[in-house]
Amino acid sequence: MKGLLQRVSSARVEVEGQIVGSIDQGLMVLVGVEPQDTQASADKLLHKLLNYRVFSDADGKMNLSLRDVEGGLLLVSQFTLAADTKSGMRPSFSKAAPPALGAELFEYLLSQAKSSHAVVESGQFGADMQVHLINDGPVTFLLEG
Image (cartoon, rainbow, N blue to C red; front, side, top):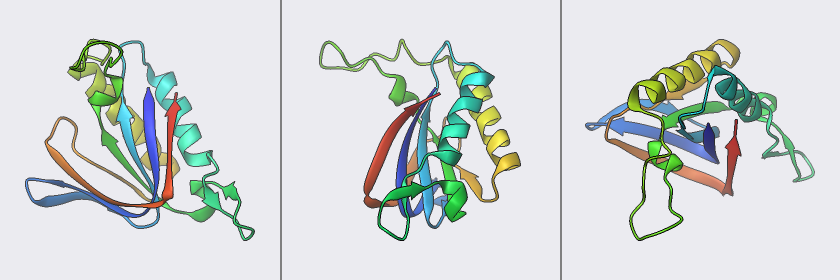
């Protein structure tokens, strides 16, 4: 399971012109699920997301986690993160989980996040989403669970 996290000042997801998820300061995470992923992969990724130190302390060093700053977490399903781009001029999605497994593990990740963090929002699995964000830094990391 992959999570492309971006430290944000704010972020929101819209589906058909309606806001379905929105946060202020925190992390907006694009989540990609691969066929070999399990609930354990989701748990590992969530632990990293909540505890990865990407926020600045009083000295300007990245020493604070999402939990430390009590920021929001916006999870957005993104199957294209699992694309194979090594050859040719068109991505292959053979490394992406089937939709049913992707939905199951994304929903599991979301429910686990909601049970362990105060502010958790999400996009809508499988929908055509418009993601708006102000990347703070910019700070972007690819994590794997």
